[in-house]
Image (cartoon, rainbow, N blue to C red; front, side, top):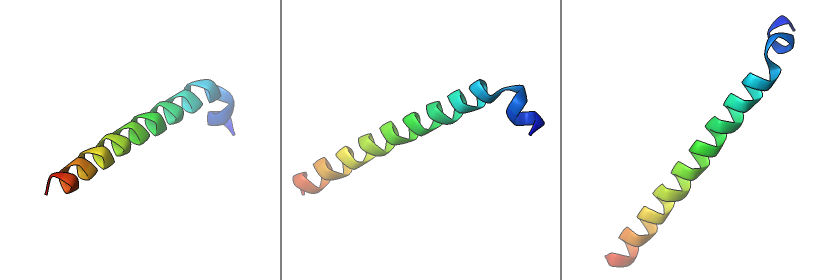
Amino acid sequence: EMIRAGAPEKAAWGVALGLTVTLVWLYIEILRLLSYLQNE
C-alpha cells in the first residue's frame, strides 16, 4: 500500500513503457521471422 501510494504514476509509466518496448520488439521479431520464411 505504501509503495502504491508513494509513486503510482512512475510505476504505471514504467510498466507501460516496458510493455510498449516488448510489443515493438515482438512485432519486429515476427516480421523478421516472416521475411526469413518467405525467402526460403
